[in-house]
Length: 94
Image: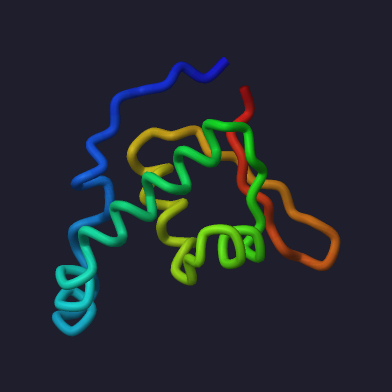
């Protein structure tokens, strides 16, 4: 059973990139990316099982893979399953 934890959604996104140009982009978009983490977290906590297509169409979010990683790094027990055709579905098992 997953017990909801306290996550600081003002700084859940990673802080370091591998080059200065990417770091500048991260800094410029930091607030939006943290908001995207919160959107994904809330959906997962509602029991949604999200594919990439779901994230793009429902939540208008193109950069979702790293957001799932940021949530995992923050301690959220996100699980994945591989679907036929090779795509993934992300979810939290409750």
